[in-house]
Image (tube, rainbow, N blue to C red; front, side):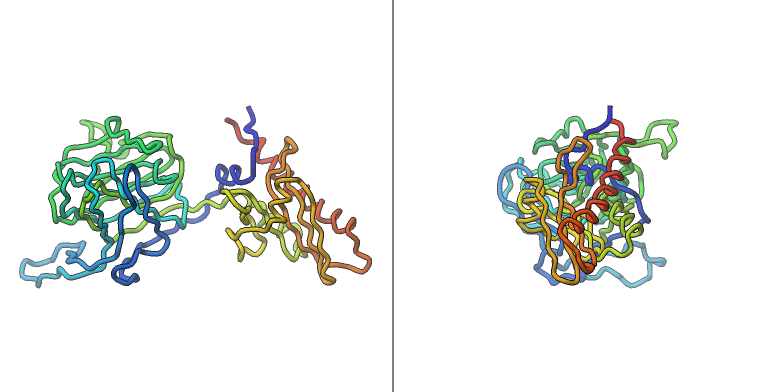
Length: 366
């Protein structure tokens, strides 16, 4: 059965194309002590208020051991990410989410240290997070275990998770690496594959956790209740994906080089529609106007002629005739230009975009 295209915003979320590999290093030394790193937002799963995640200075050993026992002690103070929460309730889970990027396939690496807490002290990372209530989590506990599980609608499915008993001493820096590719996940502690647990005779490369609940999402840091913990040397290597709207705009730019401007607006969240495709990329993500919203809600068309150029905003429709987005074109004007001629020119571009949308839709199966 062919998947119906309900809106361009959903379409752009589901359909994307891989580009070259990239890396985001979270260098907390660039942030002033006492501040939350930019791009992160403090959230909370369960009861209570979000915690304070701040950059502080702590003694951190080097990642590589000294070559000689006689080498000087190289432990020094470094900026790290720490969390402060006085809420010791067992159903209180602070989350610090990185909101600047959505990740599909990636490798997340960080070092962490658990220093204390009044209840079971736990710290870890979240990945493929949809929000503060839906994500995967890999967490370490000072009670001596490392566990992968899902959180769905705020409910922790830790009893259905996959884990291993392993010492997690307090005040010791541990390295955690999480690899996600498709529906498969592997977790490493200090360079050793621990989730899923190794099986006798099974090749290490064949061991993965397989789950299809979340195909993509955001990443972040996590802890339980009033756990005192810190993170450092964090980074994510990933394969970016370009939303379909951007791919279509790039193709239109090539086919219509004389276009002065082209923007696609879609309702990605409550409020005014935002730009999901831009001929010049400079306004991506910016909100539209009430007129762009009017085009999507009522299917109307707007026309503007400022003398040098004409601007036409008209509805983009899916194969079912439903308005999926608003398309704004800006074209050089000519002598005798009228509203009808401008609309006809813009309609040619709209048809080309809708044909590309329908063509790709035909190749997608439920």
